[in-house]
Amino acid sequence: MKLLLRPNGNKRTMKHLLSILIFSSYISLASADECSLNISYYPYGDGGDIWELKDKRIVKGTLAKHSTIHPTRGEIIQRGIVLEKPICIYDEINKTIFKSEYFNDEDYTDFIIPAFYDDEVCKGKIKEIYQDDLDVTISISEIWRGGNANYATAFAFIIDNIQLDDELWVCKIK
Image (cartoon, rainbow, N blue to C red; front, side, top):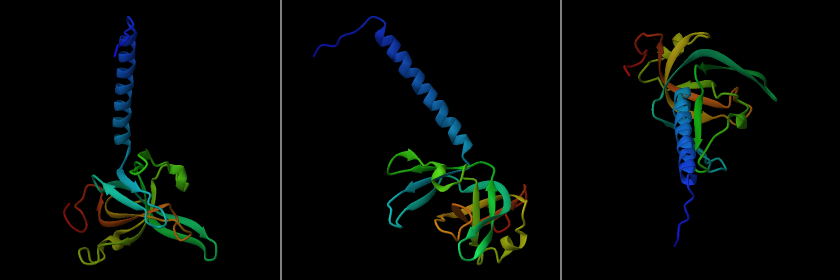
């Protein structure tokens, strides 16, 4: 097999490939810094989709109420959080970034908090301190996809701990 080489053609190609590699490395680093949480999504369909929390499970945000209009019950108001930085979702099966417009949530920053896993450990302390417009750090134990009219946001977090400003964790030391 004979390989044809053009003078300076290979150098230009290598420079082009190198610049693409450097640019894509920069983009991936910038993207990682812009995510408050990384989620792996496995779209098995027919109710079998899996959402997995990756890496850290600690995020910062502001507690807030979210609302939606239910077709038969009217307005539903649910407690939740607005994150400082959006979450990033990666479709593990199709190897693509999951687009936020699929769920009408521009940045993946708004989440409801329908339940707290604190009954045994926390004895209701998280519920006691919950109030709107409070800047907090939360520890997330699960993420749910809210795909019906009963959810005011596209997703829900189940949290197991909360921290006010730079104080100690309310339920246990992290």
